[in-house]
Image (cartoon, rainbow, N blue to C red; front, side, top):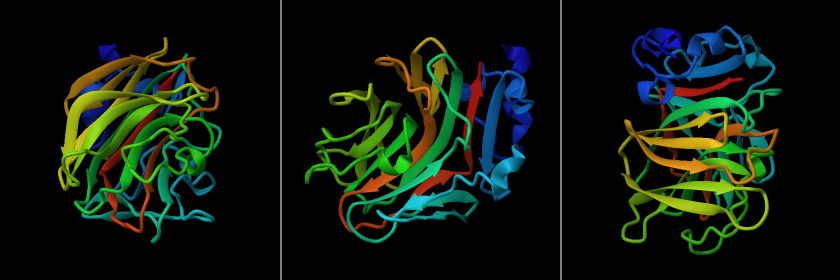
Length: 259
């Protein structure tokens, strides 16, 4: 697949991870040859590819009742900020209207996460799910460590407060078939407040997914019951209490799909 590598030159100063995209047919996806790719660059403040951004704007957050533009640029990085108040959810959709991902597709997702040290009551999801991001994470129990009500049909990376410290989040893989409780697998990795860590998902088209944290594949999982045929890629921030700490997503947000 090396002939398809194009990540080295795709963004001069903020290149895609070779661990996540090194074996992905980036050139074919960019050219819409058996694939599709979206790449959002905070420095350029827009997509480098895909001209339909004006009509399929995926940059929204949800304050519980109404969708708003909620993704901003600060210091050359994308920042996602929820509305003030308890039980609010902020999200950015990486896929556009009409683009879906299922278990037969090869796919790759990338973001760089950094959370504030005052957001112990927030849960972060980055991955694939069915339906609207606004409904992907329903209300969870008073203890943010109890996630029995998490309803995500798909697979993703979940960050939630560690039991030992409010300023550290444990990194899990969460997968859900759409029925029953989700399966949550500990990666053994954590992310400290104000630190940045690149995260990503790599799907091989046969139901197996690799989870990347930093520069390493930390887990390999299989999808329970596959993916919904209408799966979307999003980063979702859900806060339990009136905590409005932002989530920094790094310079680049990327999603690519290949048949």
